[in-house]
Length: 288
Image (cartoon, rainbow, N blue to C red; front, top):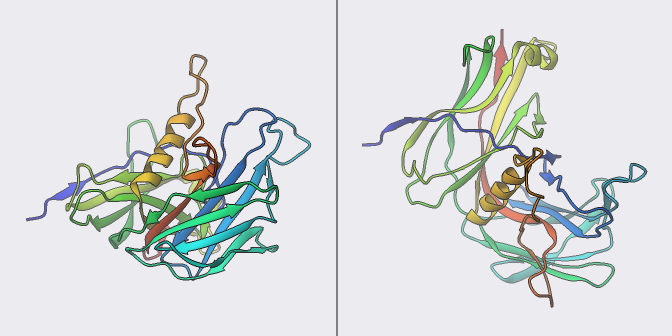
């Protein structure tokens, strides 16, 4: 018999921007490095990648990243060449029209305009479970805060250890990507359990009033992604770095992604190219 399990997921702190998880990384001044931000999702018919070059991070005259527009990106499914990504000026990203499937592996090869070659380590998509329900409660989580609107989901964790999850929250259609908004989790202690009351997001009264639409509602839905163990480890590294600040903290170490520079002794680009299955919850309206 499945046991009911109540879990409140701790939010792991990460700096992200845009719906495709652009990562803000701590880098040395004037360091020039390739940054890869790409993904393959089973929900999308068009897959996307953003390539950029780091610039002088501390120079306010310039953006933190400059787009790498003239690279060649080859796309592979199960080690078979599919085609090249094409740069889209309107989105500032490379795109390819191709569906993705559970059980298949995906990787890319990159040749930059300056002649550098990179290859991502393959990512095999693992099935993600469905979000059974999404709901909210108006409650007081602790004695130190006023009443809040707490958003929860229920879901069945699939049998077989090794499942890893990422959740994305959308309020009135906008992806919530502030440093404390990203959550990820694995099934080390919940394999094949029914997960109840997994806390996804909390709005206080002030945030509700700021976000309420013309109907005095805040619409919410959740994306549940099944990610690979390697991408989970990458996110964990990010969370460790972002939470290690303070006057006595050690200098940040370079976060290890899955983009390897060819013909070098293990050098890597910054960022990650990941592949994931995805399920999207129903949309609910939070009301006073």
